[in-house]
Amino acid sequence: MKRILLACISLFFLGCGNFLDINPESEVVNDDMFSTAEGVEDALYGVYMSMVKEDMYGGDMSVLIPELLGQNFVTDDGYLIFVSRLDLENADTRKTVRTIWSASYLVISYLNNIIENLDGKNVKDFKYYNLYRGEALGLRAAIHFDLLRFFAVHVNSKNASAKAEAIPYVTKYTFKVTPFSSVEEVYEKIIADLKEAETCLAEDETLMPKIRKGGEKGFTGARELHFNLYAAQAMLARVYWMKGDLENAKKYANKVIQSEKFQFVNQEDLSTFMKRRISLSETIWGLYTTNISSYLYDRHAAKTIMILHNDWKLLYKNTEGPEPGEDKRLSAWFLSKENTGNSKDICAKIMDESNDASEYSGGAYLGFSMIRIPEMYYIMAEALLEEGNEEHARDYLDAVVSARGMVKFADRDTGKDITLDDIMNERRKELFGEGQWWFCLKRLNRDVYVHALDATLKGSDRIYTLPIPTEELDPR
Image (cartoon, rainbow, N blue to C red; front, side, top):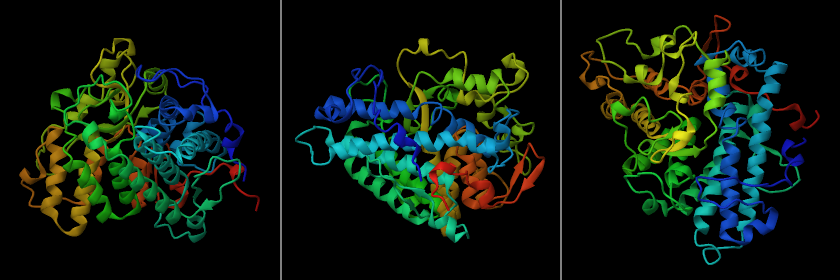
């Protein structure tokens, strides 16, 4: 096995750039960087700036690859079309997804360097030592989790050999090869890192007020741009949910909700609160960047790499039963071709070409959300439904439904309890364009209607597991 990142591992951070004008520019590398608090902070900022690049969450790992896999978008791009067909063993697919693996493990190597340089130090050395360590551990866990979701079979797979060798969970900054861990082992390590991060980040209870106005400075300001306490709890909820442990998923989702730090935006703000913005109300954790519009616009509006399929509007329309009211997300998050000057409809929620970064003057930060509060309500609803508490489950689902302008399920004269499909449908509508739907389908091993094939593919490991780069595998 030849770890791709090892070719780059010695090129740690050659300048972190400017992060909201709150960190000094730095070209300090290796151990010297960690002799001061400012150096540690620069190293962490460098990680965040690497994560927003196009080969990670600024493109491939959020908007592009998982949204094509989940059939929220279609494409006629010569390489990506094989991704959209779920032809995951195709050579072009392998070439396309290879960068997800290499970019992720490279950033993990940066995080391990930070963690190792923090070992042996404490709050006497750095005032915010616990925050530094908590952020690094949380980010390491979050990236490994997405690698697991992309490249490994689900924990419920019947393929024992595939479950036995999922991905490497790398915890050392070293040139030595890290062996593959099993799916269960990777989950255990992710959860352990996130729980330690939660403990380290306890100070965020006071650092993150309930009402946030933006414009905060310094490392302890703008904590929604950092992997914070509530990010750790929300990620634990997401991880346990994906694993199928709804009892623990509910426990951590409830922690985030009960903190009362995150509220649904007003309906009149739906059309703007996510356009290249990190919501000061709904975002639990987001990534700051000023360089997102052109990437998304080129792929979504100007070209034909991300196209809304012909029936996309049906997702937001009531197809049976009494009228549930207008889903405000339909008009707020999408633009018809008549209003775009293009030949097709676009998802304005994830981009807006006219929303120029130069016009930014404060308030909500530029960037995109990694996890938002509605997801915690969906997890609560599903967990309570599984327990048989249908009425309480409906209350959590209705909290989001009513916030988006629709009539609550409780007020619809159907005489029926909510179902898992109701929750899944709302998840898809709410998280459209945010790279989560394919993972929802994978978790339940659902069959997938593939637009490019005009056919339904049966749920299986074959359509839910990206190919690991061949150079990462030991010769057999």
